[in-house]
Image 1 (cartoon, rainbow, N blue to C red):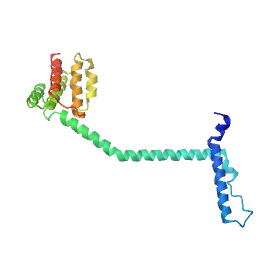
Image 2: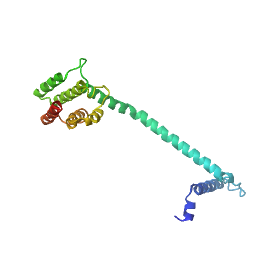
Image 3: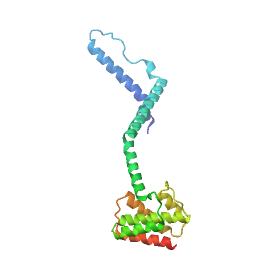
Image 4: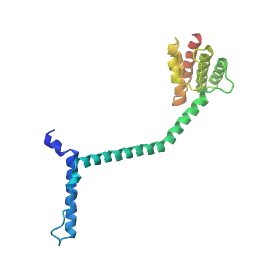
Amino acid sequence: MPTGSYEKSNWAWQFQQWQKQVGEWWELQLSRFSPDFPDSPDWSLPAWLSSPVLFFIARVIFWVVMAFLVCWIVVQLMRRFSPYVYSLRHQLHQQSEKLTTPPDKALSVADWLARSHNAQKQGDYREACLCLYRAMLQQLHDSGKVPQQASRTDGEYLHLVQQFPQKKAYQRLLITHQQLCFSQTPASRSLFEECQQAYQQINQG
C-alpha cells in the first residue's frame, strides 16, 4: 500500500478530519442564527485537542469501554442460558443414574443376567442390553480388574479396558450403553444378540 494512502487512513488523520468537520458544522450552525454578526468568534476546536497524547488517551478509553461492554454482554448471556444448560445436564445425569445405578442391595452378575434374560423374553431389548452392561461392570468389579465407582464414566471404562484381550467385546457393551442412554438408537433384537455375544466373549475370556 502506498505511503500516502496509509497516512490518510490511520486513526490520527481520521480523528483530525472529524475534528475539522465538527468545527465547520458548528460554525455553519452559528452563522445561521447570527447573520448580523460578521465578526463571529472562532468556534473551531482548540489545537490542544489534536495532541497525540489526547488521542492515545481517547483510544485507551474507547477500548476499555468496548471491553466492558463485551464482558457485560457475555455475563448477561451466561446468566440467561445457564439455567437451560444446567437443566439439560441434570436431566441427562438423572437418566443415566436411573438406568445404571443398582438398587440399594447390590445385585450379583447372576442377578443381572437373569434380569437380562427375563427382559429379552418380554421383548424389552433395551432393558436386556442394559442388564448385560451392568453384569459386565459387576464382573469387572468382582474380579478386581476395574472396581466400580459411582463417578466413573463410560469414557473412563473404555480407556481402562484397552489393556484387556477382549477389549472389543467390552467396547461393544459400553458403546451400546451410551447409545441407548444418550441418543435415539432403537433397541432391536439384533442389537441384543450383539451384546449377548460380546458378553459371552468376555465371560469365556
